[in-house]
Each structure stands twice: as C-alpha cells, then as structure tokens.
Amino acid sequence: MSDSSTSAARPRRTLLMVLPLLVFLALALLFWFRLGSGDPSRIPSALIGHPAPQTTLPPLDGLQEGGVQVPGLDPAAFKGKVSLVNVWASWCVPCHDEAPLLTELAKDKRFQIVGINYKDAPDNARRFLGRYGNPFGRVGLDANGRASIEWGVYGVPETFVVGREGTIVYKLVGPITPENFRTVLLPQLERALK
Image 1 (cartoon, rainbow, N blue to C red):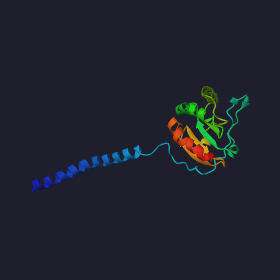
Image 2: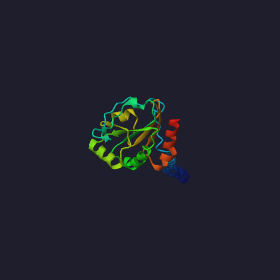
Image 3: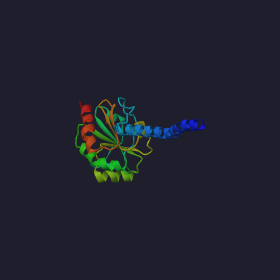
C-alpha cells in the first residue's frame, strides 16, 4: 500500500515542481511577443485634436537672427500657420542626431518651426544652435519643464505638428530620423498644410 501511495505522489510532486517553471515560461513568451510588437514612438497623446497649450515662454536670451532677438513662444503665433514644435535640449544626445534634419525642414517656408528648449542652460543652448544652425523661428525657454508637461512631453526630443487653427494634429515621440522624416513627419505636415 505504501508503494502505490508513493508512486501516486511522485507525479503530483513532479507537477508541482514543474508548474512554476511552465508559468514563468508562458509569461516570458507573452512579454517577449507583446514588447516586440508595436512602435514605441507611437505613444498616444491626449492632446491630439485639442488646442495647443496656451503657454507663453521667454526667448532664449542672446539668440539672434539677423541682429534681432529670436522671439520666445507665444500661443498666438500658432493661429493661421502650420507649425512644427520641437522640444529639445543641448544635453540630449538624440537631439544632436536630429538637428540636421530640422535644419533641412527649415528650408520649407510653408510652415514655421518653433523650439521649446527643455531644462537647459542658455549658454549651452546657444552653443548647440551655433553648432548646427538655428532652424527655429521662435525658441521658448522652458527652464523648469512646466510648459513641456502641459504639452504632454514624456522626454526629449518630441515633435508636434500644430494645424492652422492652433490644434495639435500629430505627435512624434523620439528623434526625427531619416526614416520617420520621410514616411511619417512629412506626410503629417502635408496633411496639415491642405
């Protein structure tokens, strides 16, 4: 009798020992497939379809274009124009990578490019723009990060397309790359310009 009860307990004991491993493997596979799917730059924004935040930001002191101070961020500047709003910082490595693409975009005069300089030292921000060129018609200084929070920024860089009526129509999380420049950002700008 003891042999039969011992032999019946062995499969149960083995199952109890293997069950946590099977559960772990099932969860690992689930996470593997879920994390691998989707585009991490497509984080939804609650502000899409809503007016751009009515945040006024001071200009980046000493940043001049043609001997004139480049203005800061004024929400009234969005009315009647399609705008590309880029949140950037000199300490942000991906911002250095996207700077030449922003300079390329600045050649298209059908829309304005507005910069929000996020938690940056003014000297470093001016040096950054001196190094790559200033693609921005306006640069607002967000020294404490409060305005970026109002824009729903998760981290720098982030880029927004604002339509003529001052409504946010698209948000790109992460740097502008040659790939998303061509396949995502330009089509979004073209749609806003229509």
